[in-house]
Image 1 (cartoon, rainbow, N blue to C red):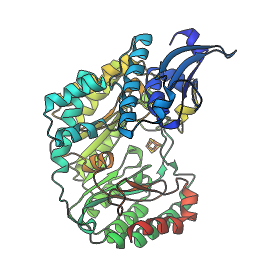
Image 2 (image 1 turned 120 degrees about the vertical axis):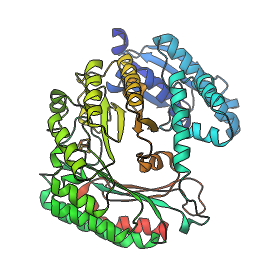
Image 3 (image 1 turned 90 degrees about the horizontal axis):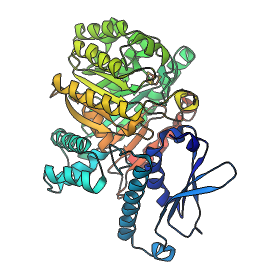
Image 4 (image 1 turned 60 degrees about the horizontal axis):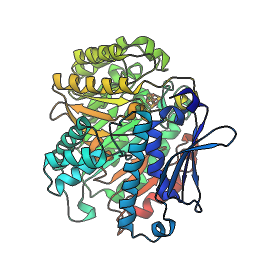
Length: 493
Ligand code: SF4
């Protein structure tokens, strides 16, 4: 970013909030550093003489306009929904080309601002479009790069095959669904973390009480869905294995008794190797857990220390071997590209070291800077260069292909470094089905625990997805458990 722009503010002024979403996110993708420094501001002004105006403004209020779209105010206000959608698309393309010319950049995902590009590809394939046409449409209509267009179509194809294995009953009561359970405790807070998670040491005296609340929620809500088959159970967090052995046994026992599905995929995140013991692995195995995730993020000790993970790469190797010895034949590992202080050779070395362990699946996340994370609060951490993020993403795909791991799910987040994506790669047959279901929104997900979000695709007559959010704060969750049960019951009974 040129020095003179750093001193200015980028103002996006739209007539209404509906239009500002795309304008903001396309602009933000071109100026990630300004987002980080809080130098992009959105304004809504129904009286402006254009649909969208974007300008750089200096400290004295002098504005330098860089973009203006659609002058005819009255025309815009009387458009049909269809026409408005078309105009919005035209605004996105025009803004994209203006910012591209100004910055000299093209974005990997073009004008797409949503988190699920594969959902678009899947819809097109389902409508009968062939793969070449899908790729072309991504490239020419949505300005997506050729590599990302091909990736979106490849992942969408795999998702269709995997989702197609699920049975779909005619009535809501027969439709398969999945369950998410949130355990919000971790040994320490990672620099980039924005999840509902608290330090396990600080909360150790409240964990049993948390499990009491969780059991109460499950015991009250699970009977409403007892006739429905389960596709997946996913226990995430936080770090579920941060519970001690007795607590973990209790957690597995309550899941087994309230959700007695024998044949579904059951994943438990065992993300931090310093929380994994042989005893805990045996508890998980005996309960029927068939997939776990041990997450290095990086295999460099210096970076691990810098990002606050308080474990070493050697502990990752030990935990992985221990899990294999305990009989786990489906182990995922999560990695992050773009961590501070790492260059391409560091990332490549991590891939090589992870490859030596031969995990069954690997998810590569591009670093996302969330406001709720320490990284989002401390503005002095540099963002990785965008071309470095592209090189890392290319390297990850190449490495995965060499390992015979195929891409099977993909999603994007806001404020991702390099405007990239998160991709899950897996050996055929070792995919985490839950990852697809949660992203593609094809099935009801019943969620328990602090911060857990229940999503109902088949909620009554409503076409839109119903979301029921549990409160994020652990203490409030325990306090307000009856309210949260009641809200779920209203939709399920
Ligand atoms: S292990 Fe995961 S949930 Fe826990 S602090 Fe780190 S990123 Fe957050």
